[in-house]
Image (cartoon, rainbow, N blue to C red; front, side, top):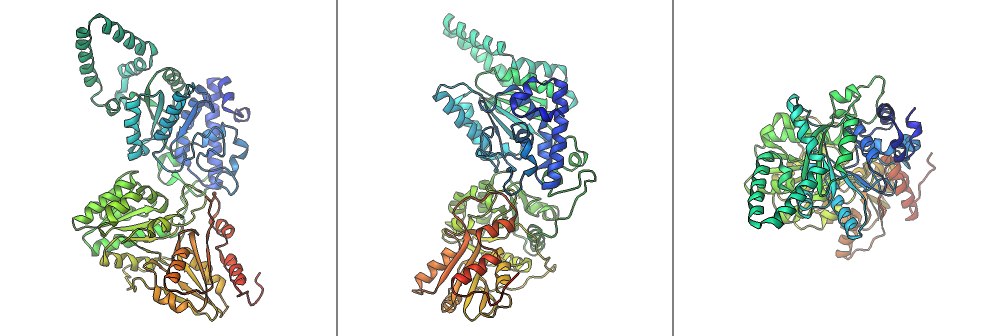
Length: 615
């Protein structure tokens, strides 16, 4: 196998074109094999194989910095940068990250998991390079979806203004190269990348400046007019960025040829590369949405596998039904229709659905505008992505107490996606905001009750729920819920576990068959149920949450007790003050001591040991 010969990017430089093409297919086979076993980002990585091989053939990693936006398309990059022997550990606990990670390899230029960050990173590197008078290339690979992000567009504006030497690869996997590209278009693209054309332009400009300022001005205006005609359909020209493309992202020979020329050019250049998600694997080519990130499959007989009924689906079903009851309801999402369970809603209520693209801040402020004019918007968003719209939550929604509901999916640790995707900071960063209320349902029925009540009472409300399966709630069921009140699920005589969100199941398990230990579904963090907390203060109290221990639910309980002048014995269980790596959710909970066994241990340390031995 050719892959056996590749231990670093330098090994690619001695391979023939035929060997490179063979290597591409071997890499695809390995990506399919490992993602079938471990899950992962399949379609996007299959689509970027030739592009990654061409980049490593032409550039000198790690001296040259190759940045992958999000990083979920970089599996081939991992395989050719000395990690093939560990590739089978991808997304496994203690194994390789599913994204690029600086601490994992010197070839990973950035740690990334969120979209639209690569261009700003790349500009920073180019500035640092030039300030230090160093000589290396900076190449950023960004997808067409990530390019819609406001951060990427803002970075493009500054890149064009500063004119630093860098190469942007636009990996466009949503369109194909049309037949009318033709020979003339190919000629113009070839002309664009020739260094002598750029040099001739500079030389001519210099000569004209010395001959006659008036003549130079006349020629310059004519040149600008010509550029406007030639580039009127090229938005990158307005940013001051040279545009080349589109080119076939699976034509390995052509990519190498173009990149060899582009690396010689000064200033910022954007190469538009068209690729196919799922390339080389027919099921992934046919349905790149499902096969974008499958959890596991049989590579020889790949079939869609039901992942069970999820919290995301429970939310999607609830808002779809609510929209029939409330004509002012409107749902927004930042490019997460499938992930947030909104496919059904988008089909049944297309006139009250908006996907703003990878622009979380825009989603929140558009929702604020809707709320100011009488609509009742719900922003469906992952916890880790809501971080990117924090100012908008405060400035545009909370100050005027607008009736915007935040449906926060993937709250808590999320498993194999790791540190960039764990939703473990939202309680701390939201509960400090005045006017904003926070709740967490124990099941799908309670989620429905909270959503309906939130629409009725108004004001900004955050409802968080985990990445997990949940029992389906009956269609049309809308139970009433006493807003801001906790729920005692099990009475106790010595201690009470105050469980928030997903940890409730662990609390019930830890307290089972022990009459001394009570369990409370502390489903509201803000407002906190102070009346019940005061009544429980005569017992030992243990709080538990799937969130950072600092600043979360437990901290709120301690603050409330202090305000009321109460001093019961209290223990706070939560996640440690560090970034958690990727791994199975139960394992991460066990390590943090917030599972049933961790709760039992904490109770024993508080003086309430188990009454019998457990297996």
